[in-house]
Amino acid sequence: MSSKRIQKPDERLVPLEAAEAEFKVLNSRFLARLAPVASVEEARAFHKAEKAVWADASHHVPAFIIGHGRSLISHCSDDGEPSGTAGRPALTVLEGSGLGNVAVVVTRWFGGTKLGTGGLVQAYGDAVKAVLGVTKLAKLVHTQTVRLDLPYNLYEIARRELENISAQTLNTVFGVDVRIDARILADDLASLAAKIQEISAGRVQVIQVQDEPDTPFPL
Image (tube, rainbow, N blue to C red):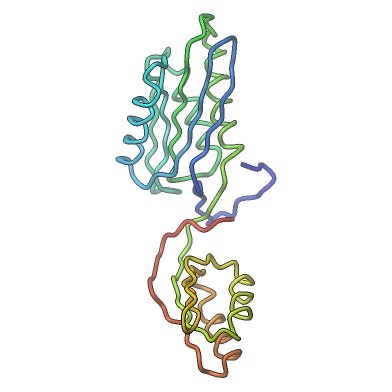
């Protein structure tokens, strides 16, 4: 995750998709895997799944944050590492990212050399920093899924209008006409509807298919 980007006070950042990072410290292997989660149950299920997949590992340290601002739940565990050396440093780094609805599990394979208290704190914190560094971001926003049924001669024009507002095209069907299903920011609905009316001389309407108050929208 880039440190150059400034987060807006009211912006609710979330991971767009899963990510992972891996490195070694004194022969101990650390694998940090991150996932978008919408509930405590999903976060715990992610931790359980990681333990099952990497059953040969020494530790599976979880940290997660559900929600944003004052309405959030956070949790961490040392999973057998000395108290305060794993879960807390992992969660501290995660909290500093500004992300919500996110879970990280740092899996460690002991390499035969003890890292000491300071070494463990550093390693688990660095593991979360590493996976955040390759995590694609999204923001939770109010979106509308819309549908356009267009004659072929208006397809490219309409497609460019959707691109201009960073719409996510969900589906395009080429039949007698062209049908486009797209997800747009709710704030762009009125202007898009007016533009489509204009370019089609009133023949094409923007149909609202679904209202989605909290949708991860790529940055």
